[in-house]
Amino acid sequence: DIVTLPIGVTLDPGGIGKGIAADILANMALEQGALGILVEIGGDVRIGGTPPDGSQWRIDIEDPFVESQSIARVNLVDGAVATSSTLKRTWDNDGRTANHLIDVHTGQSMVSDVVTVSVIAVSAGIAEVIAKAGFTRHDFLTWAPTLGAAAFVVYREGSTAQTINWKDYS
Image (cartoon, rainbow, N blue to C red; front, side, top):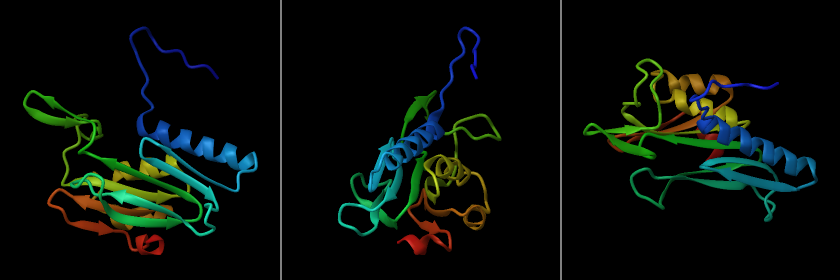
């Protein structure tokens, strides 16, 4: 199908576009005979098959407050990890810091006590979508596992929380 946009209208697939692209590339490589694949696009990671050392894939989750330092690590055989953050891709908007995440309730930049949400799911596209909900759903840590996802949340004051099934991957 062809989608036509009016003049002056643009389409930004955002995070879900990165996730879906990682899924497509990983699936293509596996279909072509790759024994193991790790695809990372803009922080979205899709893995499949066996890594070169024959173990599990180890993915570090970056500490949002200390660049180049890990706050958590996950071990996967197959699946994806996506992290969304209100601390990345920010700019000044009339003296207030704005970010690229939009609160669906207000239509404005996301304002939340949550600063990052990392989600493990079957695909990077799905992980991306679920991660966004972590900024607004008060029941997120019990809701995400009902979708087959695990999640790790970092709050503005530095504390962390995780879904009950996160430990299955750490």
